[in-house]
Length: 329
Image (cartoon, rainbow, N blue to C red; front, side, top):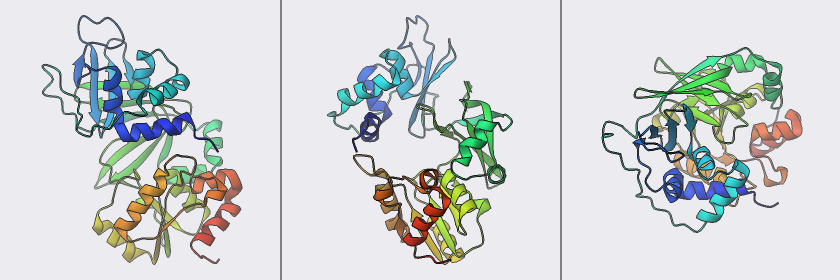
């Protein structure tokens, strides 16, 4: 199976990061207020910032919002399908500069590039296409409501005194998690090429924690979709951190080990990538926690549990999973 442009560029993006990629094409870009890199701009009106290592920008005149790829797509006048091959060809041999940072423009010292943004959403009613999307993974509406998942029509990002308003895509959802008496939101747009997710709050937030079953086996997943899928279609409990690169607090791991007799880390199997990042990160997590790692075998060409359910159905997927952990009904 060949490697897609998206997979090749994904490797470049992980190696270089948004900043180095952007500065290759827009060398005078700074944190804060800039002259627009897209048009003649006598009075600076292009606002940029970094949140949790991710680049964002807003044109204050057009109210258009950008991430790294959408900004470069407009800057280079290329659609996404042509942009990705160009970025890969231009940058595939570029050496990483881990010390690279975006400097702050004049009069922008008050901007904090490490500050996390907050989110707001407009919820909408569930529609037929929403139900059908989640049904692919055998996740019911009842389960979605149990996990506080809702479809949305708009979402808002707030940083300092800037409000960025975005119309949600056709398939767009908000996840709500409750930690220490606070609600944090995550926007998920499964088919988006540029704005697949945004999450407020700290990265060490657990998804599915409050829905954990009282059972003997816990399957530790990468994403909430998989945790919901396992919870609904197996006798096992399941939960996940918001990112596969996040290591949990040792006291939380200790709590889980006391609560469950067996815990397995079911990492993603990026079988179609030049480097299997899901396997790499799950291995690191396994070494950190001392918990066994499992994955859907390469032969099935399924990235994770929900992907396997989509391809093979629940019965076959459970047969694969049960074999991995030597579970008998």
